Image (tube, rainbow, N blue to C red; front, side, top):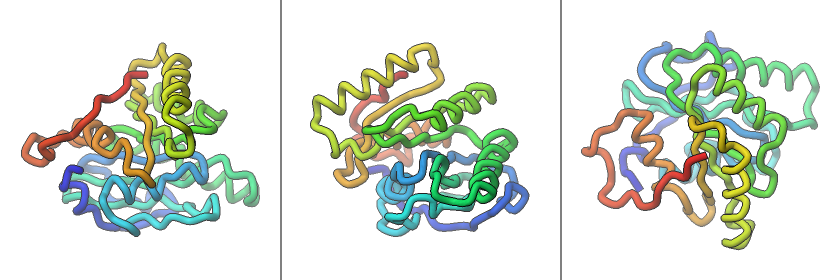
Amino acid sequence: MNPYYRRASFLKSAARLNQSPPDQGTEVAFAGRSNAGKSSALNALCGQKSLARASKTPGRTQLLNFFELDEERRLVDLPGYGYAKVAEAVKQQWQKSLADYVQNRQCLRGLILLMDIRHPLKPFDLQMLQWNTHHGLPTHILLTKADKLKSGAGKSTLLKVRRELSDRPEITIQLFSALKHKGIDECHQVLDIWFDLGNETVSADDGGETEQG
């Protein structure tokens, strides 16, 4: 693990884009369907147990949550999307906040899109990818909860998703398991590039290569 990410600390929450920190520096955002494992992934990537609050109840992340790495770099946990068991007006507000952020945040450098490996490429995921492509935003997909499938089945799903997105070179894809700490170094490699981190902050052994979509 790159020790740089252990320094992440909660900065603030925002219900709307205009409540966010100043639009400067560099941000990488995490998005995904409710219960795709965003909070668990953030905690695993930052080597902390409770940086982001994980919940067994889908749809609990209703705000834009900002985590500071240093004065110029931030991670952002976006509202979970696609969860049906909330009022329609509430769901529309979450999605408006998410869309406003992706479309209008100038310091956003890339987006980590999390998909449960057992249910990839759902309509909301595809909409998210379309938004990102339209705005020229690179996307790195984490196929989360990879520990739920046997190794062969996980690799098969990875290849299937890669095939379906083969015409989108701006998208990279990997397997990920927060529970088993699988894929952390691989994801750190992507974050290092997006955050323009020099070799001085990178651990000696990053391991693995990023799968191209």
